Every structure is written in C-alpha cells, then in structure tokens.
Amino acid sequence: MADSALEALAAFAESLGASASDADLERALPIVTRTLRNALRTGPLPDLGETEPAIGLRFDVGDLRGGVED
Image (cartoon, rainbow, N blue to C red; front, side, top):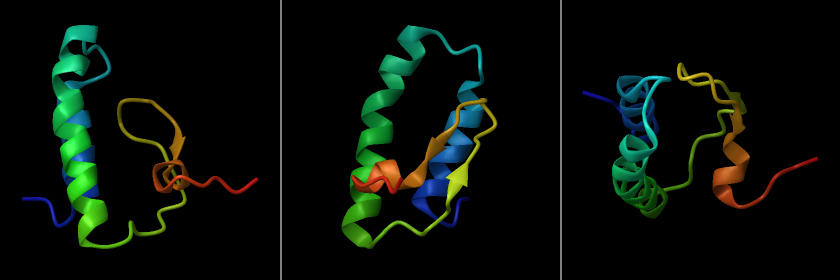
C-alpha cells in the first residue's frame, strides 16, 4: 500500500503503462483528479522537484500547485 497519494498515483500511472489507450486515460482521469483533490485537502504536496514517472512523461510538481518558478 502506498504511503502517500502521490505514491498511489505513481503506482497507478505505472500500472497503466506507456501504451495506455486514450480510452484508458479518460477512464483514469476521475480517479487521478479525486486523488489529487484529496491529497491537497489533507496538506501541501511535498516538494519533489522535477519528477520523471515510469511512463516516460516529464512534469514539474510545481505545476500541480498552480505556480511554476522560472
């Protein structure tokens, strides 16, 4: 079991795999949205810096907080 909502999301993304279809991603969106919303309600997201999930997408966790530092 994951220790945090972000770990749960990472495991979920990894389970979808890089070859997930658009339909798979559309079905996953409500789960991801709900998990992030709940994580933000319980406290601030940890500062993870730049993260590269196993599915090969790059993003900055700062984007999830609504502010990106240049």
